[in-house]
Length: 138
Image (cartoon, rainbow, N blue to C red; front, side, top):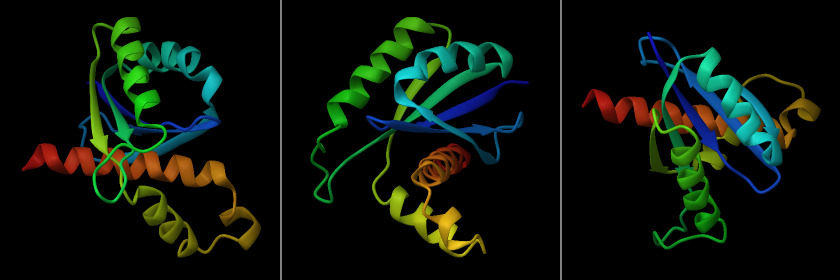
């Protein structure tokens, strides 16, 4: 079976999450430097049999574009161009970083570990993916 990959893109770091083969559950995968994203996708798409990519689309509270929204749209185009066999979707990611921070705070990790920004990016990607998977069930 195939999997779905989620991307929480940032200018410096990018969080990645992946679904199980039944496409029911999201799991944080890793955080990488954003400049290495396309190389990482080339490996993951083949190795994990990725058929779909969901990219978090950053919006402000009033639903207007944030300072990075255009970068995310360009990323979507690049993923579509480089992986034409993969479906690429955007999903509103408002509040995912705050939700990720709350989940991490309740996880029991030491304060030093909880403050790692890369962890927030990875958990945010997992939240984006789980939200996406839930919308497909309805």
